[in-house]
Image (tube, rainbow, N blue to C red; front, side, top):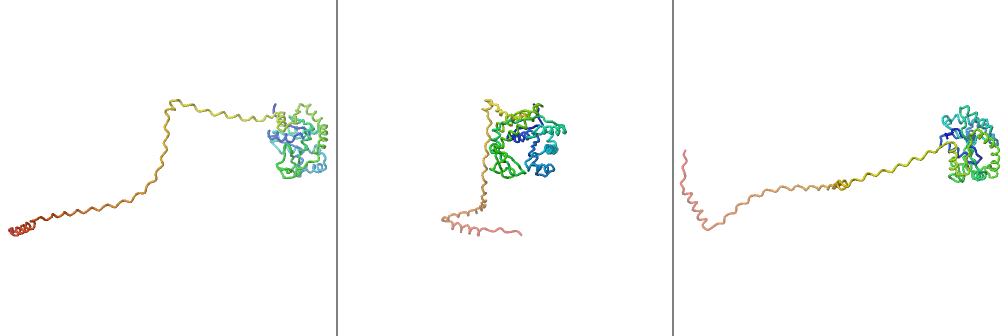
Length: 309
């Protein structure tokens, strides 16, 4: 099934149309258009269409179809390329005249509705969901929470603006049941309108959000990306032969830490040369004096040689 690019989500209040439309638009990269959000934004910004819708909304009346179609046209033109890539219409149209007006709007852009998904939810499940709903009291915010499936981070406080969360009067169980009956009476002709064109697909809506999401994505032909294949296990290195194991390379020896250098000792002074020892005198012997005297007499008696002139 080819991916549908202009999609309508139908279902009673509390069926989860807003949650499913937002998730589908984010997953597929489409534009999400909710007429309730568009009206609140237009009133908050004070646009010409918003100024027309403000007194009607304040009185609790239904905004005319031509005004709603004008808001959709402005949103599609402002979205540019994203609006041409795909659109998810959340809760609009609700009647066959609105459906025909939407067809004319899209035909002027060279587009048409590809798929209509009806989230079929029982009345008891819807009453339980809606009675657990809490809305932000700030009219410019209008965020909606559910105490069971999507509670706020802080009890009684809006995550976006910090405003007080309240239970609206039309979310009371008795009011919800009355709205259910009215919705099916008004929407039954619209269901037949799209079924006759082979555009309608029903999806069970009593399950969890995840279960309904899988049904909606399957109905529009959106396949979730397959998980990335697991990386193959790393191959083990081949075992070394026995010879290689025996002749193993010696492990390099750890370098010895260098010892700190010792301080050089001061050089010793050179020793002085010892003086030669004096010869020891011979001990006098008896007769030495006589012999010395005789030699002295002999020297005096020796004749002297005459020097020639």
